[in-house]
Amino acid sequence: MTRDAGPGPERPGAERPEAERPGAGAGAGAGKGAGAGRDPGPGSGADAGSGAGGDAVAEVFAALADPTRRRILDALAAHGEATATVLAAELPVSRQAIVKHLGVLDRAGLVAGHREGREARYRVIPERLGVIARWMDRVAAAWDTRLSAIKHLAEGE
Image 1 (tube, one colour):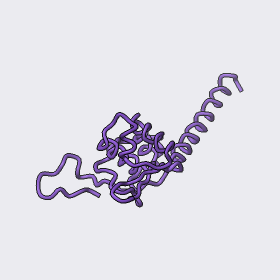
Image 2 (cartoon, rainbow, N blue to C red; image 1 turned 90 degrees about the vertical axis):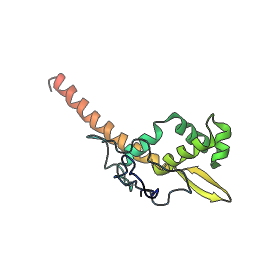
Image 3 (tube, helix red, strand yellow; image 1 turned 180 degrees about the vertical axis):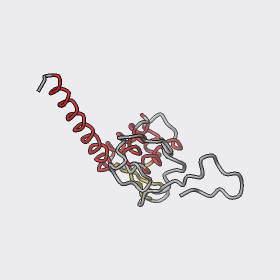
C-alpha cells in the first residue's frame, strides 16, 4: 500500500504500490525493501514461496544481503526478543537505522514485532528461511542432474 503524503508531486517510482505482508509488525518503518522493483530473471525461484508482494526468495535474499540486517538477526536470535533500543545499544548503528532495517526484515517475513507499552519488541521467524532452503534444494538438484549428464557424455556412456 502506498503512503499518501498529501497533495504534491508524485515520488519517482510511486506508481508501483508497495505490498504489505499480512500480520506485519508494529510500526517497523516506511519505504520499500531493498531490491524492490528488480527483475529477478529466469530461474530466480519466483514460485518458491508466496509473499503478498511477489517473489519471496528475492525478498528474503534482498533482506539478508545487508550485513547490518544479518547482525540484527543474529542479535535477535541470541536474545529471543528485543527492542530497537536494545539492538542499537549492541550494534554500531543508530536506533533510527535499526528501525529501518527491522522494517525491511519484517516485510521479508524474517522478523515479527508486537507492541509492549511504547516500544515494539521483535523476534526472528526462522520458518521464513525455509523459503530459501527449498529454493536452494531445487537449484542444487537441477545442477546435480546437469553435471551427471555431462559426466555421462564425457565418459561416453
